[in-house]
Length: 134
Image 1 (cartoon, helix red, strand yellow):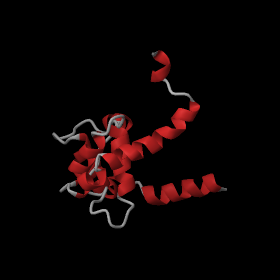
Image 2 (image 1 turned 90 degrees about the horizontal axis):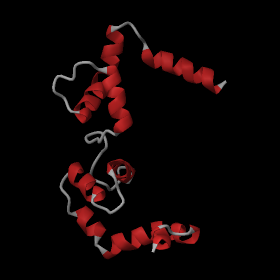
Image 3 (image 1 turned 135 degrees about the vertical axis):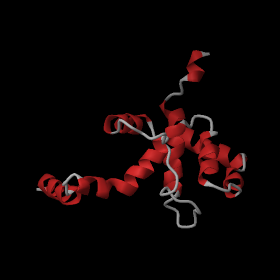
Image 4 (image 1 turned 60 degrees about the horizontal axis):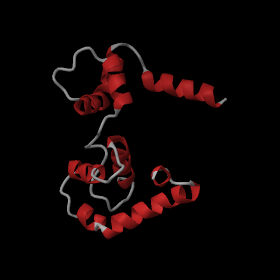
């Protein structure tokens, strides 16, 4: 019935444990160990029932904190709706780049772009942070 679709508080507390049990039962570790690239890791995580793009990418990023994990978030990104909104706000011409490609372009060129416009953003940011901390 309707009650079974909405677990009570005790059942909600068990959901993460049930997810871990499900991943163990479905040989998730072996599947993860067999992937060849970051996109495959993301797709594997995204295939977990209840994981949307955002959560799948966040778990991917969390995995990159493990020293033995063979992939880096510096080479792979999935942009979410907020990021996409910000990119559309900042850029008029994308030159055919995808959201993710534009993120990497921004990462690689931000210093140069601000410098070309006479804005020392790193010092300004540090000054702003110092003002906030005081």
